[in-house]
Image 1 (cartoon, protein in one colour):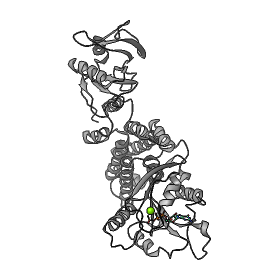
Image 2 (tube, rainbow, N blue to C red):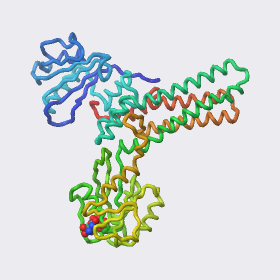
Image 3 (cartoon, rainbow, N blue to C red):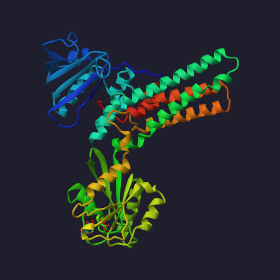
Image 4 (cartoon, protein in one colour):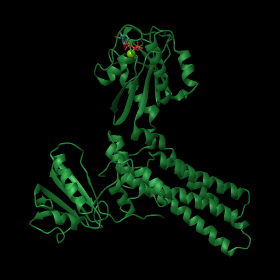
Amino acid sequence: MNKSFDNDTITAIATPSGVGAISVIRVSGAKAIEIVDEIFTGKNNLKDSVSHTIHYGKIKDSSNNLIDDVLVSIFKAPHSYTGEDSVEISTHGSPFITKKIIEILIEKKVRIAEPGEFTKRAYLNNRLDLTQAEAVLDIINSRTEASLLGARNQLDGLLSSKVQELRQMLLDSASFIELELDFAEEDVELIKSPELIKRIESIIFEINKLTNTYNFGRVIRDGVNVALVGKPNVGKSSLLNYILKESRAIVSPIPGTTRDVIREEVSIDGILFRFFDTAGIRLSEDEIEKEGVLRSRNVIKNADVILLIEDIFQNGSNELFKEITSFSKPEKILKVINKIDLGRNFSKQGDIFISALTGEGVEFLFVKLKEITTDTSIYTERSAVVSNIRHYDCLKKAKENLEGSLKSINNNLSGEFIALDIRDAVLSLGEIIGEVTSEDLLNNIFSKFCIGK
Ligand SMILES: Nc1nc2c(ncn2[C@@H]2O[C@H](COP(=O)(O)OP(=O)(O)OP(=O)(O)O)[C@@H](O)[C@H]2O)c(=O)[nH]1
Ligand SMILES: [Mg+2]
């Protein structure tokens, strides 16, 4: 464990930059309350006040010039976000005022916080574990109900407690083997222990259950990329406009209307879908259109779902289908037949029939989109879901370690090998919650935060 950190008192503006009704400056560290007391004049002395109280007063600079009337909230260690003595100063929302106050604090030897440093301290002071600290960032970034709920569950410790539980089971097994090794002359008995095998298998099963939620977790956290693809004039842009309920992309009867990729986000039942309208794919001599077609192909490569659109008139898109499946899974493709308001063409086969003009079938398209991207059966409102690739990778590593240990058992290797694999799996799980970390890992996580969080 390497939970070491400096004792500096740190500060940052916690509200967005620019003019607003109120700005909040955060100060945290052993001397936070003492230092703010030196620049604050109010009815009460902050040092002698109780934790979780708010005080009205004035902030003055070293020459006794009034900077602003403020409200100061104080939080005493360990009952604060960071676990240290902390102060929040609410000022009038002028960037000039906040800059002034920060300057005064710096004169008092307070240092500007690094990105995410308040949350990092909360982690270092065991107020949060690592998955919970990461959830704070997800909450700030969440833009849909589903992503907020997922992040909320993670902050509440649903994932942490599941990982803790598995880790404890493994620790028990490892100690059991090591204990046996100390006493047994021959460890053959132990290695064949059906109880041990059963235990490891059940933990692998639980890990699989978690990793199986990853696709869903990623989708609710990051959203789904949907590519609208097809030959020119089939109605890709019309469908985008219908979904957005606005005339976002130019629609015309002339094939080759769309040249650039148009990207728009919509929340459907709480899940973020990112639609990419692309240039119709055909051979063209036109330089701009050629570039557009190239961009369409790039979008297809990065899409989670591809809506391969045809209209009821056009001959099929088999060649396009073949091309797409050469680099992308066929399960990702939904074949959509458009313009059904003009009549049914029974020779056309597709997954979904719609009219981008009247909207017929679009609701069903949404149902299909959700079906293909989210396995909702995995998800109940309060279940542990893996949404972060770091967690996913650690779980995979732990699983590999455990599979290694089963192999060692089958190959009659000595108990020490088995215990070693199990210890490695314990470390991999520990990395998820931050029991085991490195400075690089922490920097990598917290640098994604904004300053002041
Ligand atoms: N009747 C009917 N016409 C449609 C429908 N969808 C699109 N259209 C018409 O088909 C023509 C082409 O539509 P667009 O949305 O521009 O087609 P596109 O696939 O984006 O075409 P490109 O950008 O050129 O690749 C326009 O005249 C639309 O009004 C539909 O569902 N019903
Ligand atoms: Mg178009």
